[in-house]
Length: 287
Image 1 (cartoon, rainbow, N blue to C red):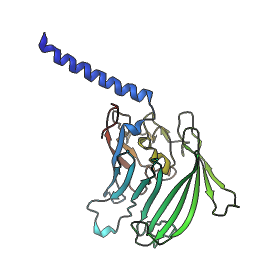
Image 2: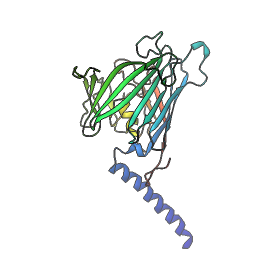
Image 3: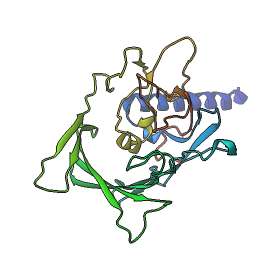
């Protein structure tokens, strides 16, 4: 009977490991940032040319870059409007800076689709535990990183009120003049299922995991803490999921009346596919 001992041990170990994964997900429903990371997003633009967004992370698991590129883009089409993002953190692992490059023709602030391009530099501050400010400075021209000595032009200051769960609940327009009261731009109300209101009656939410939940930075910068995925159910498109409940493909619902895009990937086709790096919960996560 000794030869049977090893298979029995293997089966017991595998069963126990799977049980631990299931139990961990059940007991920690919001802990998907410690289970999976998005490594890249694939889609195609109006010319059916493939576009790839590659994401890199630091050793704390926070994203540091999101670079968009198009391998083999036809020269006749012209320059692709690629928007790349960089992220930097303070010693408390809070988002300190993020900057976004606006290529020619993209129409970054100040809005001019023909001439405006440059770099938008976001600086975040945390004056209170439940309040975050976002100061946007725009550097015009062919700029990859913020110039060291050029002050640029400050275009806006946005304030975010956080609820008891750390979600953005109110968005404010703040003035540099301390005598001018804050202006409430919008309130973000989540339903009993933890999702934002649907923009159209033909849409619904699935019961799976929103990709933004893989990291709190995605939830914050894209202002969406919804638990599930917004989907349009029909007989022509079906979403598939991995074993952690994350979508492997989603529709990019950018067209009217939806105006819903993930990761600001508008004008990039209708189908988005995701690649993840996942690890089961076994103490410190090692990717």
